[in-house]
Figure 1 (cartoon, rainbow, N blue to C red):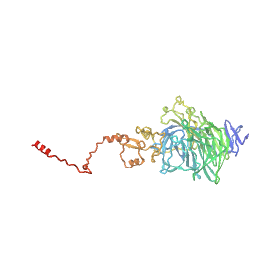
Figure 2 (cartoon, rainbow, N blue to C red):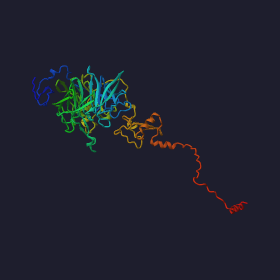
Figure 3 (cartoon, rainbow, N blue to C red):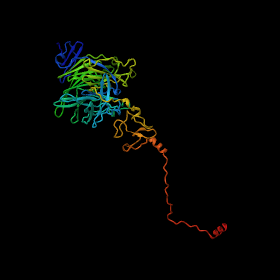
Length: 575
């Protein structure tokens, strides 16, 4: 085999497919600029890995609650069960947790409601959070997921860290537990589109947070650019999960902020691949190899810059075995989707990128300007593209596909039957980095179906109605007013006329009065009907109050005396 070495970087070309082999050399920057033909080195040093296979594409039929799926959602997997997280809008009454079990049977995609334990913290729906898993040391089974940052339905950016685990699993009914982790020290600012990984060194573990975007600081905002976003500073945050201590580290090799990149961790190393920089508007081909040495006292972080031929953002990474990953989807530029698929192999100090044969993309996928998805685990990815509602039988506005690296018999490709693309949208593509994010997840359950058709449309008849002429509550700007509120405004029933619901905040009710009315089951009338009720009532008959006559104080009343002549005159007059 003929090899040519350039700056400790080697290339092999296997027929029509290119394998990029990057040797990690401390303190050097590798430049890939030399190729030669030969058989693949993988034949020599990849024993035990899966054989190169074709990515399979399967069309799914959207069913129950799939209208809640939106770009930026996440999936996480416990065993054979996959959970959907990051729904569109705030949770509804039938599934207040906003987390659903993914039921995938006979090419039909359904979402079923999921419950949380009573001691769980509230987990809001978050788009584009950073998600990673924690596995058990003994059997490697995933026992926890970490969720950091993300956007809420009100477009607020979160800085909180949540830990998701299974509280109980009885008779196929799984109850989840969510805990909010308090952090101290250098707390990462609120962000989305970033990455989170777990590294292991010297018998200890730490959480690594990097990149992402956030809103312009308040003191720099203007009316015209109030909602403008910027890349977060390229700092690396290390978090000790046991004590919640967070430390910030500056890496001189990383000068520009990155977001919507791919990150892969292996032992004490995190590989940061691709990503989009807003300031430069580029998708770098750099691969940042970050080594974390958890020394006693102060950890040591080193970074090497490696070069690849991959320029990507918003891609999805899925793992098939401990040292084998696949990168699919994403974008090569603002208007060009990344239609190729790549296998990533990690061996010792080296990382290899190999282009594999992509599936036979459907016409809808080829013509769609945007796409999104999330990792379901075990080499499977759930993909979605904008659809045309008038050609669909479901309420979902997206088409969904299952992309898998496995046996073709298990995932047989099906023709797309959603209709023609003649009427496809002509709008400009969304910002690519707002479309994609990655995480982990699974399938199957026989629980009762959460059917959103069984409940009222809360945008018209529920919490977000216009309850009175002075009502100004908006779902996009509302914030909790009472301590009892969580993600919906408190309401009280008015007994006037035919009866209706009103917002307690619009009625200027104090929290004490609201609780008193609720606990004592007191009939209530809103501000508009209280006057009417009073007008219809017959006034009560009041007993008059007898008041004693007032007496003059200070002098005796004068006595009038008639003269004798007046007395004589009156006597003669009446005789």
